[in-house]
Amino acid sequence: MSLLAKYFPNAVTMKGDFLQATGETLYMTAITAIVAGIIGMAIGIGLIVTQPGGILENRVIYNILDKIVNLCRSIPFVILLAVIAPLTRIIVGTAIGTTAAIVPLVIGSAPFYARQIQNALAEVDRGVIEAAESVGSGPIAIIFRVYLKEGLADIIRSSVLTLISLIDLTAMAGAIGGGGLGNLAINVGYSRFETDVTVMAMLIILVIVFAIQLIGDLLARHVDHTA
Amino acid sequence: MTNEAIIQLKDIDVTFHNKGQTVEAVKKVSLTVNRGDIYGVVGYSGAGKSTLVRVINRLQRPTAGSVEVNGQNILNLSSRELRTARTKIGMIFQHFNLMASRTIADNVGYPLKGRLSHEDRKKKVAHLLDLVGLSEKATDYPAQLSGGQKQRVAIARALANDPEILISDEATSALDPKTTSSILALLKRLNKELGLTVVLITHEMEAVKEICNKVAVMEDGEIIERGDLVSIFSRPQKPLTQDFINTATQINQALEKIFRQAASLNLSESQQLVQLQYVGASTDAPLITELYKRYNVVSNILYGNVEILQDTPLGNLIVVMSGDPDKLVAAWQYCQDAGIQITHLNPNDSEVA
Ligand SMILES: Nc1ncnc2c1ncn2[C@@H]1O[C@H](COP(=O)(O)OP(=O)(O)OP(=O)(O)O)[C@@H](O)[C@H]1O
Ligand SMILES: [Mg+2]
Image 1 (spheres, rainbow over the protein chains, first blue to last red):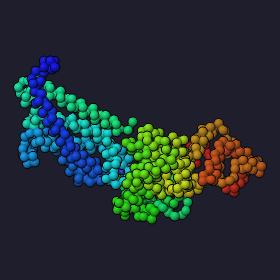
Image 2: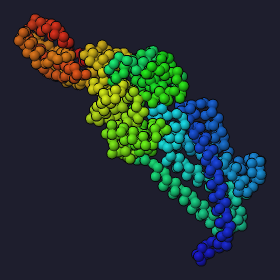
Image 3: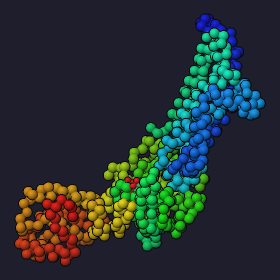
Image 4: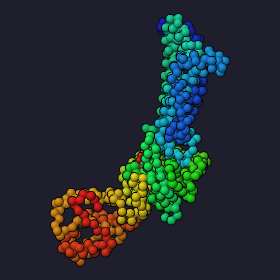
């Protein structure tokens, strides 16, 4: 304990703040992951099935989805935060705070996840899809019983990647008023020159990231039967 | 092998447009397959075989033509009706196309989900695995199986819906000869026991030779020759067909060796290098004996081969005949009268007969 006090003189006095900030980060991450996960998954599947040669090939829908994803992904997150503040105010009633941060976080991460899903599902062998078609499977069956099942290991890996980048985004959102560990690191640690607070925030984020990575890898390996 | 048509393709055209390029993969092809047939479709890579058979279950929509399967016009079906129709047309592929994330039992049971109760599905899967001889692999994953075993799983999956037709698109092309034989034997057995109609696509005439009763040869999107197996093998009309047959009977290799040695054979005026081909029960020995007894013509056998196609023997002999020139002519005539095809081989002409 004394060691902790020696190297983290300010941080040890802020146990409550850290607990709250960690909770906020996890809250933002979890809610965003669920909402962006559903949206990103839907768009990713939409891209795969409507792409040229897909099971529900549709040039118009594919192009619209593709453009939306590209557009959202090319806006830097910091700018996105500012730009959509009015929209956020409409949806959650305020543009600051943890819940308000979820709106830009969703918009920032859903397109990224959609691309990840699209890439993961693109790995599913075209021949396997064809085999499913040849035994009489329709589009719904192929999506749920072939694409999502065959692509599961890759989907888990993509989800891990997205979650980690999402935590990165929560830190950024936090820094401009969203709360969480990012807020603590910047507005307390950095602004007051209490470097140990910044470092502690970083360490907690690293632990969260490693935990996600570890669980993700285990899960992916569990469902992967390709080798 | 009744004469009831189960698949009728009429004037099928399939044209692909790709970045300004037009590929006519299938041109004006008509094909009728009868119930109980094992119909072979042979051709080199790019001939249009896959494209043609994918038209049968509308995995490929033809640019023109009509497709009738089991009395149903496949091209007019709604997507729901098409799905039902597809359950009666099983398909197996060169690369097996199994789902890596599912166990063998789950792969085989995949087509049955929602069609049978859990219990019935389990029973059916067990029965299918037994049929292809893989009962003990039920809980394994495809990655743990050999190529031949994977193809057996694919066959079991293709049979899950009790199809009446099985389309095999190069299903043995990735397998070694022994495994190929066992898969072909399995198809033959299914044909006999279940009355399954098989369309077998391949680039190897050996496979056709083993199990098919009919064969069509494709080149550049067209069927250039077709007929029942024995007549195609005994009297091929097109050079390409001959080529496929020669490769299958390995007569090409024999001829190559013989021609290479032709110089050392030192054929004189009174000697002829000939190929004798016969269909049916006549055997080599009496013919050779007869030629000697009647005409004093000595036949030195350089190569001999008998194929049994559909229970009909098909013989091939390459011999050097020696005798008086006029006797040779008489011997030649005798062979022709006996219904034996006799061809003069010219060693200097590298083009194989
Ligand atoms: N989806 C497609 N788009 C464009 N061209 C195609 C397509 N499918 C096939 N082709 C072309 O059609 C021709 C016939 O192809 P197909 O696959 O039917 O040949 P194949 O006889 O099955 O050959 P292989 O023995 O190599 O499988 C080829 O020239 C091929 O490039
Ligand atoms: Mg092919």
